[in-house]
Length: 430
Ligand SMILES: [Zn+2]
Ligand SMILES: [Zn+2]
Image 1 (spheres, rainbow, N blue to C red):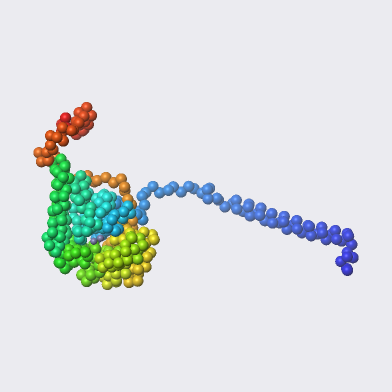
Image 2: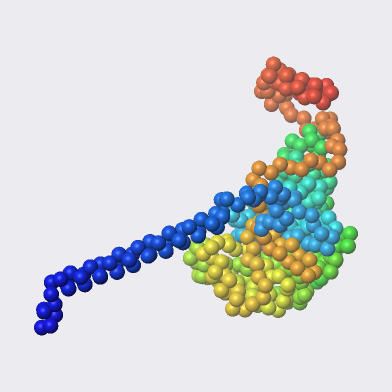
């Protein structure tokens, strides 16, 4: 072979040339890199640029609503969900309650179900302004927190009567008036402890019962706000839905009802329409523990299944459709939405507590409300009357004989207040 005839000297020369080429290649790469590094050093590094000062101003817009921090425009309506769950309240969801605030300053509560009072308190609104409550029917999940809001409100600085509107029933005993008169009797002991001890003007009830059969009849008309009622089909005679109109905006609150002709006709053209959207019967069985027959009866004949809700909203075609009255969890909502979407494809909110909507004629926005769990009541809006102890209910000598007055302890507490406020009060128990 020819290659075998190459001399040893030539082979050595070839190897040397190859090694030289390799060294040259590697060296040039190192040199290139060196050039690049030298070039990179000429560009100023980020940390060498002037430091930017972070702004010190509050953000103009936020993704969460903080109660009491936003002006309401004169043409704006703000609706806050303060109870959206099932008949039994749970930490995440109280029972039915919606707050409507208008740009003219008026505020209305629609239903005041179990557990909703603490959510109302969290709105930080003076109680004197929260004196108008509309009850759709007398299920406890729609007015169960009325007693605590009514009587508790007297120590939350409400000094005006609490005004309540609610439907009649098939007989007077089944109407709102009878129920609230019984409530006043039921809480006679509670009232007895307050009368003559605090300024109890906020304990007065103004009861407005209206005919549950009224169809789109005006039950409230003040300050440019008109509220009408329509009958609902739910439970017994004496369930209604409400329609509020103000400044060209129409708000509808269904309370509880299965799909009915009055809602489908009179809620039409609503800017904001709330209607119950109950758990589908399948979930009433698996999650709520209902029997199949209970689930079907309660879920479609006493309440409105998601598919029924969708059909109602397809007919009404509101600008914003709101479903509520189910435990709205991450694993429940997709199934409820899937069923609603079988019959309705418009704008939709499936409400959960603390959801808030700002609505004007041209726009709407939905957010969640920040919860202030350490909220305190706002001060009274007018001067409080001094307690009139002559009006307090006397207690017996027996109970009095058990009191340990502790003057050496209580005396200095009285002295402290008397000194600070220029008064001369003396403790009742010696
Ligand atoms: Zn009900
Ligand atoms: Zn209900």
